[in-house]
Amino acid sequence: MQDLGLIFLFLLLVNAVSGIETEVVESVSVIVGDSVTLQTEVTQIQSPGLIEWRFEGYLIARVDSDSNKRVQAKVTEEFRDKLQLDNQTGDLKIRNIRTADSGLYELDINSARGSSKKSFNISGVLDSASDGMNVVSVMERDSVILPSGLSKIQREDQITWMFKGTLIAVINKTAGIFSTYDDVLDERFRYRLHLNHQTGSLIITNVKPKISGLYEINISKNSSRYTTHKTFNVTSIDERRSCRFGMTEGENRVSAMEGNSVTLQSGVSEIHRDDVIIWRSEHGDSIIAKIDRGKVFTTLDGADGRYSGTLELDSKTGSLTIRHIRTEHAGLYHLDITGNRRTIFKRFFISVCSQNWFRYVMVVIVVAVLLLVVIGAVVVIRRRQTQNENCSVI
Ligand SMILES: *[C@@H]1O[C@H](CO)[C@@H](O)[C@H](O)[C@H]1NC(C)=O
Ligand SMILES: *[C@@H]1O[C@H](CO)[C@@H](O)[C@H](O)[C@H]1NC(C)=O
Ligand SMILES: *[C@@H]1O[C@H](CO)[C@@H](O)[C@H](O)[C@H]1NC(C)=O
Ligand SMILES: *[C@@H]1O[C@H](CO)[C@@H](O)[C@H](O)[C@H]1NC(C)=O
Ligand SMILES: *[C@@H]1O[C@H](CO)[C@@H](O)[C@H](O)[C@H]1NC(C)=O
Ligand SMILES: *[C@@H]1O[C@H](CO)[C@@H](O)[C@H](O)[C@H]1NC(C)=O
Image (cartoon, rainbow, N blue to C red):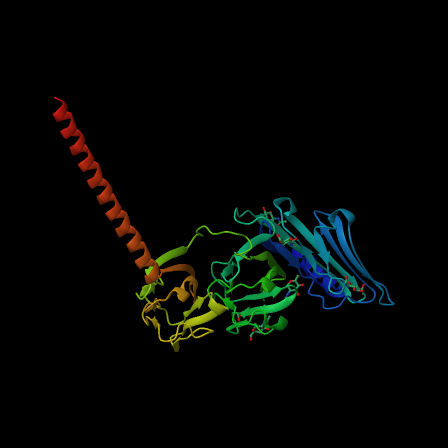
């Protein structure tokens, strides 16, 4: 026992002298199809210095800096498509994780200051819903959710959302920060970005063509040395160009007679305090009614004033009523409910039958009925006449 104690003390001394840290294995479980970045925790490679990555003992990547600060970063040929190496920090990004990528990733850092070792044990977790790039198609003016994959954000989680490399949203649960940056990139995201505070999912409302592209979410914990990523390829489709006039899922069709009232049901029994409810109409792409976290409660006239005095918003359910509806109100309507705990999108298609058209149809029906009566009468009279003729022959 005493011998063991001495050996342990000796090892401890050797470690302290040579600067070798004891090896730690960090467990990393990644959904198959997602990506992961393993962090060296080096901010800038030392000169001279060497960072090496091995997978199951096989060298896959290295960053080498000589005493003249000339840096060479190299990924082993057969892993070129799979790996991305940061030439400053030595961080290793493994893209599109497959179950075959599971295993032990070892990191060696060597510099004049000493050396350190670290290991990451990656296991690829299967999730039938995910396979590499998440491809998302969304109709223009519709809304869409990009799921974080988390069922609930943990206290230590830090989340960032990027669009084409630009930061558009940040969540720092510890600091209570849930921020979206909708003023970046010529304001194409103005009023369109929302976050689900429960899951960290990104919500984009009233989709425009310019928001098509690659979205990436980074999820990390302050206590771990890796970041997981999900990528979404979002394409907005022009509905008019795609010639798609059928019913879409979640679309409600409403027909109304000109002059009557129509109520578009939100489907929500009660508004939550944190809900933002927005009604949009295709006319001028405008917001026509809004409830903002119970504070602002408005109906608007629309871009060209066509809704002036016709709208009524139910403060309990968020349902919208259009009074004295006119043919110019016909068309597509969107409802977006974005709250901390729920997200609901609905689209309604209203068709309005004009009174004139109604009268015209009624006249046609009356004329048709009259015609039938006349024809019937003529037939009956003719039959009677034929019978009489037959009688006279006998
Ligand atoms: C690191 O990589 C970037 C982009 O690949 C490149 O522009 C830069 O010159 C590299 N830096 C060094 C020191 O090799
Ligand atoms: C890595 O994780 C797998 C699955 O969790 C486990 O079976 C294996 O023993 C671990 N390997 C190491 C070296 O920790
Ligand atoms: C999150 O907030 C905590 C506490 O304010 C801070 O220490 C940390 O640096 C923040 N993380 C990021 C990524 O900004
Ligand atoms: C997210 O991860 C990618 C890949 O590692 C990195 O290039 C990017 O800077 C990260 N974004 C943020 C905001 O940390
Ligand atoms: C990470 O954040 C949590 C929550 O604030 C804190 O308790 C913990 O000490 C932090 N861990 C590290 C390694 O900074
Ligand atoms: C994203 O989708 C578009 C349209 O389907 C395609 O043209 C593009 O190549 C995709 N981008 C990537 C990086 O896969």
